[in-house]
Image (cartoon, rainbow, N blue to C red):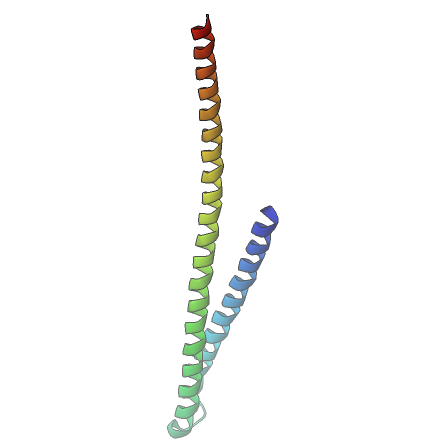
Length: 115
């Protein structure tokens, strides 16, 4: 269980780093496209390149957002699983305690009835 949690934490960390890098790349591409628009090229030559880079940046940003959402869902599911395991342990402990109290209660009654 601990080994699985550790490997899933490592995987989540790697995915978050990947998403961070994608976001950085997407924002750099969008920034470079915006800077290049007004500088050296004529408007007709700059448009197709800037539109293409904008589309690429938007696509990468969308993918990064989706990856981020999936990573968030995965972390929420991991947290829910951890809470489920804790709840299961608590319920098993309570069940054991109830059984122990029943045995003590019925055991005491049997002894009183026999006397």
